[in-house]
Length: 311
Length: 242
Image (cartoon, rainbow over all chains, first blue to last red; front, side, top):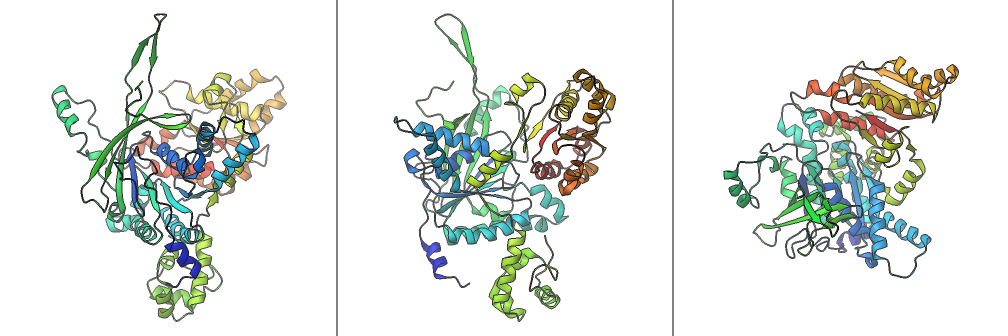
């Protein structure tokens, strides 16, 4: 296909590599490279959208506040983008990174506005609209060389709609999402962007609390086995695109009774979310794994490091 | 899937549509995804014309990207916070119901969900003087209960009647009727309902589980409901559904 000089230049010019987008999530030097797709998978309420907001803020914030200053496109398929939450996370990060000198409110507003102007939001209401929007985004990609990240929340919003429209044949059911996945693949190859997508788990695991005899065996399997509910269910073209798969889950926080000097007991329970990453990048043929935990606070996602006390 | 028809955009005549169908291009998606040069040769039409048609169709059917800053501005100017009439409930909800959001009330039978819905409806129609749409799927809605609640607010029967008039009730008993109703509300029914008093500020559904639970035996269809629901939320309404 013919393209103008500007388009050629925009395509070849290297976009910002996002390997260092969140080193706590990915294995050593295993962050998402150009053209790689990360899938965040898990049931509802496990923090996938929060992680997405965390990554979004990391990308749009100015370098002085710990960001990467790249443009981001957020594709919202279930109208669940919470701008107020996003702005409060940005505010928190900006004020945390602000220097001791007294800042003016106007300057803060201006920085917030410049961060938000790096974000483009698209709402899609069906998978055919998603397909057309991805075609349209191609022109946006050529006109914005600073665009390095595409976030999709969530990729399987139309799963049941497509299945009911496709009738009895699996091929027709998966047709639309396959086309979207193929188009995404082409965009990734040509423009070298990175894609993060959330996927809701549709099958619940009913294992519940296992008996004492099997609990020891399950704990040793925990890092390598995938239960029924974690098996990927979307179409093959999408599964082939995914290089990193993050399984998100929620843990019951252990009740911590801390005795203070006065003898009264305090009980602090904070919800702990865990994410386990399975990466199969093209450079290393082996699969690498990494596990991390975090809290969700007012200021966004807070990772639990080796030095943090789990409360 | 949008089927290609003549007249959809300038340049798309009957002859061209026939040629495209012969080349196995029946929908807008097919046209947009296929190779323009090859198609122009097959249908013996100029590449420029076909490219222009593709561009217009894409612009017509795509979701348009909005800058985050503009979205935030719009949100700041159009979001309103509706008080529920109950100060402690307001405190729980972070000062009230936000327009553009869905609030779900869930609980066992007899735990007061419908009463809260009635209270919210009465508060919005009487104190805020705005219209409310109440969708009743259980048959548990009685105007006399609303009147009783209004009588504690004011003794003036005129005001009571006015407040009652601002509450529009729909009685539906299966999920397809609910989807149709939501769809028609999205298509302009909200403007129609606003003719009487102030604009519609809240849509209350009591209850969603009553229409969905008969279906849960088989494939879960909640995708449909939340799908239409999310679209309707974008008409600047604070929604409450139990």
